[in-house]
Amino acid sequence: MPAPSDAPKPRRAAIVFNPIKVDEQRLRTAIAAAEAEHGWAETLWLETSVEDPGQGPTRQAVSEGVEVVIAAGGDGTVRAVAEALRDTDTALALLPSGTGNLLARNLDLNLAHVEGSIETAFTGEDRKIDLGIARLEREDGSREEHAFLVMAGIGIDAQMVVNTNAELKKKVGWIAYVDAIVRSLRDRDRLRIRYELDDGPAGAMSVHTLLVGNCGSLPGNILLLPEAAVDDGEFDIVALRPEGFFGWLQIWTKIVWENGVLRRSQAGRKLMSLTKEVRTLRYLKGKQFTVRIEKPDEFELDGDVFGEVVAFRTTVDPLALEVRLPAGHRLSTDQPEAAVSA
Image 1 (tube, one colour):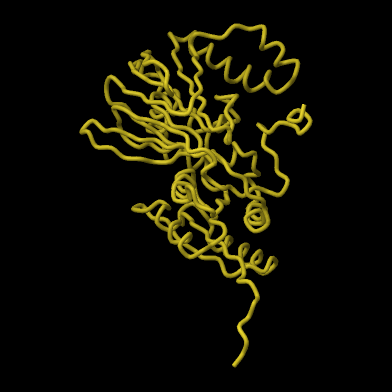
Image 2 (tube, rainbow, N blue to C red):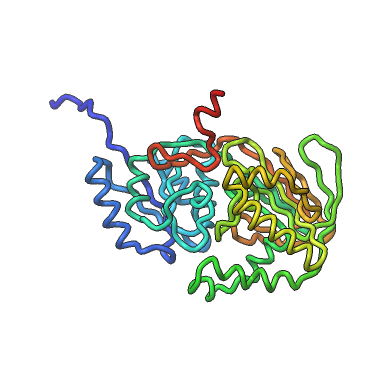
């Protein structure tokens, strides 16, 4: 009778993929090559569907004991996979597809090299990041809960998603959002909201847009929330409150010029310290944010619209998700070691 083998089982990955967004044959060839090179078992392949954008396949992968789940699809696929990986020991690896790639952009990952992303899935290092949890309340009183990785919001942000031309987006990518923004700005309605931030007193304000961010950057290298970090245990929140054309001009100057240009250099940051904060932008920071809206409005998570809500609560689940990054990779929000030890 042969003696039982003490050899460890080979490591195994799973890929949860949107068949509409990816070139499956190219992926199968590249992943098979990586498996052979690094001695991993055959990858588990699981498709998403309209009915299940990724949570079910991801739970199946976790139940089969894989080490890493590769999310191959748009931002909706990544969000669904992350939701199912919440508080597990299984890592999320990103294979950027589609047009947004919001999490990959905020993690400073290379969006153009498929083989490099696959190599990271098999050889990278894991890092814990925060996960946002949004509890939504509908007009009929029903409630539901979803995770998000980048941003949640109401107002122009959600209207922009609703107004984006799908065909234009396929042809020109994230630039299609510019067309959507122009059409969304025609809506002059402002939202009256009541809110509570952590254990602070209740407040009220009128806003055009309200965004709760776990990360700070949008497509087009737009840095909307400059202090946001994926692992600080807090949300960065911004309320846009423009009054007419000059109010939008102030917001655009703040986001594109100050956040996008001046903040990137020491001299620019010194110049920023001399400028006054604009009333059209209000920044908040906290771990739990509860909002009730005067009338139903569209709500979005990571670039996908989730229908109209009358209230929502966002909470941070700190370091609830393992993400696989290239070995030695540093994020733009990381502090140099010298600065940390100083």
